[in-house]
Image 1 (cartoon, helix red, strand yellow):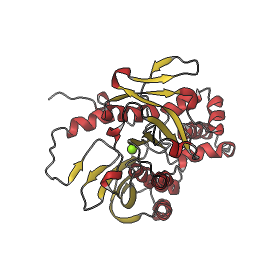
Image 2 (tube, protein in one colour):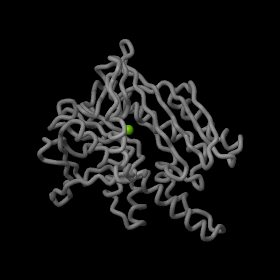
Image 3 (cartoon, helix red, strand yellow):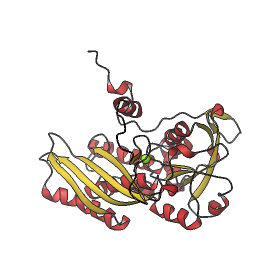
Image 4 (cartoon, helix red, strand yellow):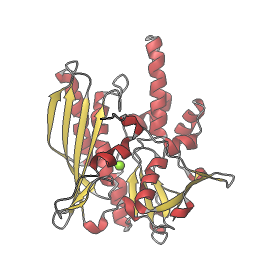
Length: 340
Ligand SMILES: [Mg+2]
C-alpha cells in the first residue's frame, strides 16, 4: 500500500477524504460535517454540536500561554462555533491528556480558566475524560447548543447581492502571536531581558484571551436580523469566506480599505513590516463573526457599533476577489493558518 503524507491533503481535504464514505442512518441528523457545528433534530429546537482539539506545540506554546488563559480560550473557541450557527451554547464536555510534567496545581489553573469562561458564557460543564500522554498537553472540548430551526444560519445560505459584514476588528490575534513569538526568542537568547508586552496589551490579549461574540447573536435577535450565512473567523477572513463561497456556490468581493483593524494592531503590523490588511485577511483566531446579510435587512444593523461592511457576495462566475484602494481587483487567496 502506498503511503500519502497528510500534508499533501491539508486539513479540510483530509476531513472530506476520511469521512466521504460515511452515510447518514438517522433522520434526526439534519446536517453533519461541513459547517461550524452539526445540526441534530431535537424537538422544537435543533441541537448544535461542535468539537475542537488543541495540542501543545501545534496550537499553543506554554512558554507564553498561561494555563488559565488556555482553558478560557479552549471554551471560547467552541462557543464561537455555536455563535457562528446563530445558536446559543449551553453545555461542554472537556477531555484532557497530559504528561507527568503537569502538576495538580497546573491543571487546577487550566480548569480555573475553563470555569471563568463557563461563568461568563453561562455554560454547564457536563462531562469529559482524562488520560496521560507521553508528551505535552492535549485539550478537546465538545460544545452543545440550541436554536430554533428557522433561526440557524448555515454556511450555505449566501446569495449574490448579500452584504458581507464582519464584527469587531481583525488581524489582532495574529499580530499578538507574532509579538509573543518575538519576545520568546529574545527571552531565550537572554533570560535577563523582560518581555516588552505592556505597550501592546490590546493586541496580545486578542490572541491570549479572545471572546466569542455571543453578544452579537443576542443583538441580531433583538433587532430581528437573521444572517443568510455566517461563519466565525478562526482560520482568517480569506479562508473562512471561501468556506461560505464554496458551500453557497457564490463568489465575493472584499474591499481592502474597509477592513476593520484596531490602531494598536496597525501600529504593531508596521513594527513588523507587515501590511495590516494582509494580517486582517489571513490572520486567524480573532473569533469574530463574518455575516452575509440581505441588503434589505442591513439598515437594521448599519449604525450599530461593532459591525463593518467589508464587501458583497457575487455570482460564482465572478470568483472571490479583493478590491484595493486604487480600485484594482485581485483574486483573493486563502492563506489561513495551517495546523499540519
Ligand atoms: Mg468555525
